[in-house]
Image 1 (tube, rainbow, N blue to C red):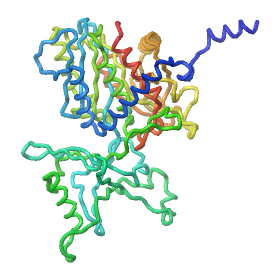
Image 2 (image 1 turned 90 degrees about the vertical axis):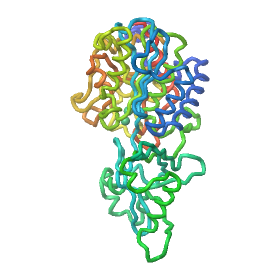
Image 3 (image 1 turned 135 degrees about the vertical axis):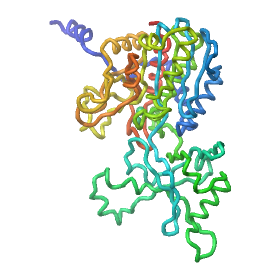
Length: 468
Ligand code: MN
Ligand code: MN
């Protein structure tokens, strides 16, 4: 075979995945940079699911979205949102086609791994005051010590009012911290497996050290802390019983790398996909063909349970209400709908090649990463999208010039993970996972690539613009 013929045949038959920087259009680079600047600002305003919900609604209202009220008449091009208990949001841009032809959904989650305060958190030990915590989601406990922390959340009072707490969130605020052992005394700890070196019960947040009152009094530092909290928020110790207070890293989103090609931040999982979905929806200039729906769910990190999670009937209720405006049965809408389950995936990390299967991983700068299935072992816990659905997305992305890749989350039997995909698929909505590849996922400071963030946004735009 001639050399040129051989080359031609190879080009025709072999996969041609390339680094996204060899594919992206020059004029796209500025747009990408602008997109990422907005994303970083969104992250800094969205450090908890409640704050993220608030920021989402602010942006949606700016784009002309109105709160949905049951019974409201809706027509093509109407834009509505429904806030689920301040912790999750569903948005819809009504399309030209009837809901019986299905809707185009992008579902992401806005909760991230963190340290929640226990119901009785405050105590004093050796004249230092602390909060007891209970970690939320899959955290590697050793990563959460000696890190500046901020505390956000709400205290729900018996009279129905709510107090919003923000400690360490503003410049000049004090930060909180969990201490760790000094290496000089770490010999025994060093011998423990990584997962056991920092036990969950030692993740206690240091709050203060300065006592008040006379030297013969007990609990003087705890009282001082409680006094400060009472002055600022009007709460007493029992009010912690009905509070949701979340300790998160007090670190702003920033560029990473000399070339500024990456973004480091807390909570990329999964606000990086949530923002892409939201922005793609808000950027729709006119009524899409099919109704575009964006779901930003809570509780994914602990199994999507509860009233604000993706398993909640809140989503079905919202969709049923939309369908009722057109006398369409919900089941008819769902069976014709498509959902992109937008969640992050693991990026191949050259520092840890052992857990990855390099022919089937998502790579930094190779674009949005599709996952046909997640799960563990024999795909357990995955909805495993059918080949037809993957083909549908391939076509959609290629047509829109989206840079994308497809892979798995690590080696077979190395571990695994899950997303909201199965809960959407269980509703008889064809669903595929796709999202941004992340380095050090679930760490207090995760890293993603700007190109992948931008291509994910483009992918979601393609989903909302789809005609069939
Ligand atoms: Mn996730
Ligand atoms: Mn996660």
